[in-house]
Amino acid sequence: MAASPSKFNTFTFFKLPSAWWCGVRLKYIDEKKAVTTVKHKWVNQNPFKSMFWAVQGMAAELSTGAMVIDQIQQSGRKISMLVQNNNAYFGKKATGRITFTCEDGHLIADAIAKTIETGEGQKFWMKSVGVNQDGVEVSTFNFEWTIRLKK
Image 1 (cartoon, helix red, strand yellow):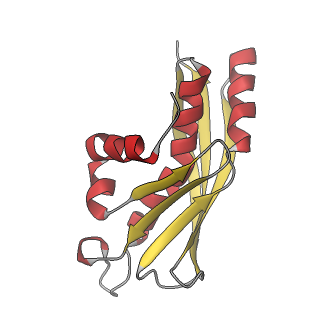
Image 2: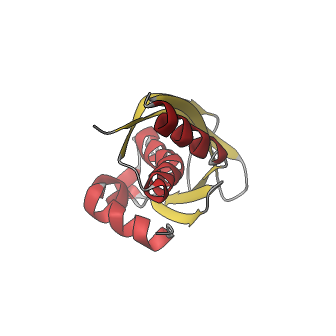
């Protein structure tokens, strides 16, 4: 099953409703890259009239996790996934539409192959960069994903 933004956005509505209600949407996905967007609005703002950091984190995580979900499904194996660690940098107030892009999809296939081959869990870091409508970086998130075969 090939991933599509509409399938993931439906998944988000049912399984990650807080992200959906805050406006997080997957716009593009393939094996190497995923793009999400979220627009600053009243429901997702902080007291300083910019986007709450956690909303940015949801959009950033979806840009990495959607590719992990997709490649796990393509493997045909039962593999669990979990964020074990993360960090973030905030360089500018997030207002307007913020676009998060992750181009680390190439890391996933290797980790899946190793966990299937060895039976041992694997860890890998993925980065998502958020830019505003002017192309200015507002935040960067790094997520350490862990995967392992389900028993």
